[in-house]
Amino acid sequence: MEHTHTGVAHEGHTHDSSTKGIWKTFWILLAITVFEVGLAFLYLEFDFMARWMLNGIFICLTLVKAFFIVAEFMHLRHEIRNLVMTILIPLLLFVWFIIAFLADGESWKNMRKDLAPGTPVAPATHITNEPAHH
Amino acid sequence: MDTAVTAKKKWWSGGHSPFNVSYGKLMMWYFLMSDAFTFGALLIAYGTIRFMSPSWPDPNVVFHSFPGMGHADLPLVFVSVMTFILIMSSVTMVLAVHAGHMRDRKAVIKWMTWTIIGGAAFLGCQAWEWTHLYESGAWWGRNPFLNVDGTLASTNFTNFFFTITGFHGLHVTSGVVLNIVILANTLKGTYEQRGHYEMVEKVGLYWHFVDLVWVFVFTCFYLL
Image (cartoon, rainbow over all chains, first blue to last red; front, side, top):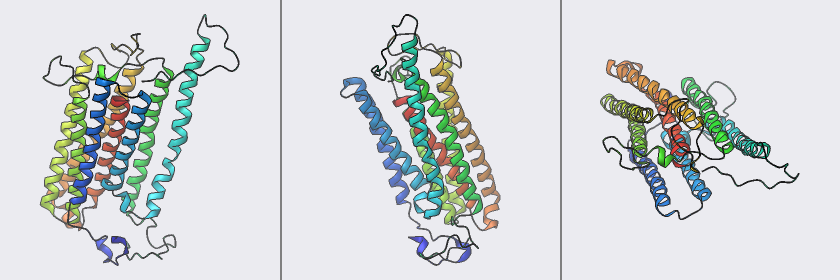
């Protein structure tokens, strides 16, 4: 790795003159996008798997794409650990952020359903409804 | 920038950046982190409202048009082209940064020009999509599309769509402006005089971030 070299002070890093890595990342990103769109089309045509499974695949592939953009294009993978951590650790807040808010949306929907005019009083331990999101 | 780096280096003992990057690059990273939370908040608000709604419009029905194809039913095709354009302009941006490392002024000019063209093309596509949706009756506060289950949809769908893609488009616009500034400086020879092309890297970070956000917008609005 370039950081183990003792470079000239103003020169910064030593740089590889080949652009192979850049194009490799491009092909990975393109292939993932084409795969996502292809999967969406197959789903429209044949409806061959559960919607939540398809969504799970889409979200995982999105995270893979995000990883490649940040790691390679933004070069974060080649920075020192201090920088990587100062950027990534705060982003862990998103885990709580997403879970809390989506759960809130879900319970909001159930409350509106339970409290809609003409709805009989729900028993204390009611069964949560299937998420109707799509 | 101190680069006499060994495994035993004491990063926090002072005298050099503990992050091994210049002040400007570090601050660009922190800005992008805060911007990530802004976009994250918008997308999570969208997710919350979508989870709250008993039903929601089908993106494959809403986004099914392609310029010049009339009423042909082509879900996802146009937005895939937009995604491709943005990824491609990210690649030309990395190539510009790479050329800057090589102190190759001509190549920086070439790749920055392509990046600007890519950004402008993306904005053109978005302008077409917005115009098309506007003409089919969609706008903030107006939603002509039905829910998947056939019921009338609230305006949440269009409000979030125009707000979030609009905010992203605003980022692309400022990115294109910044890229033009960098290109002008490169043409003037500013970075050649300065002895390095780090400004290309800083603006490059911002440009990749715009691409990164689009990856999430694409998933949240068009795939899910």
